[in-house]
Length: 294
Image (cartoon, rainbow, N blue to C red; front, side, top):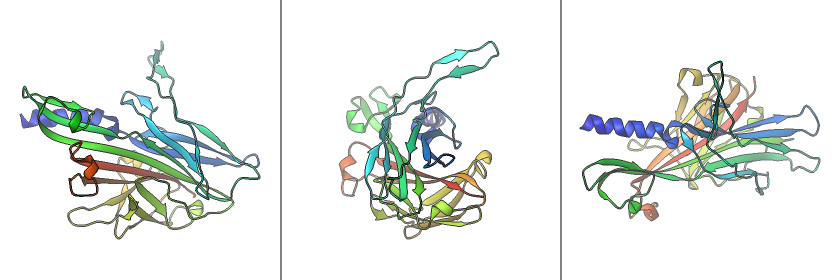
């Protein structure tokens, strides 16, 4: 029975959007024609820069925020993409063709554009995943908080997922990035517009405005992977977060995905008390995509 339940849980989680796919921002600058522009899109899946549409066989996701922050902290909306179920067209050659959305946006620069560091951010609408035993003894899984489950005899687990992403671009010069509003802030401690292969990349990490660290009971790590190193072989570099800091020496040029994932238990007496009775824990998932020069 335990093996059957374990199999059910694995099937559900690997099929769910929260567990099987990651969220990131693709942000690439072009200065072929003055004054230049940047193209932003939302990455979804496993492999940067593009892996899957926002509406895929893994299910439709809901974008809650898609914004650009200027160097002075001014926020401009990039518009919430309209995500629809994919329609596949079969061909005589045995392949299928689908049309989908990547939330592509062109960010045009002008002579009046603020100088400094810009941030593009995106977040998914938070979702609950709850496994429970119903009154007939059957195991069920729903995307609801515990207090909305009416036929539960007991709960196996209930977790809330929060997924966020961001990336940086600079105009003329690097400036200290303003807080983006993400639950987990992954902030560079140096000029990342000049970051090149072989450099040591240092980060400051906070969770809900407080410095994130590690302990024996609760180790936290910063991960780094790229399609030019690690990603194709299904592994990543990692650094333990100590006193709110972590560092990675970047071995290759290309687009790198930096990520931090933190799980916190909900208790009626801790900082997550507003979730007490709704879920047993919350999983914070945040990514920062950076472009590393040769």
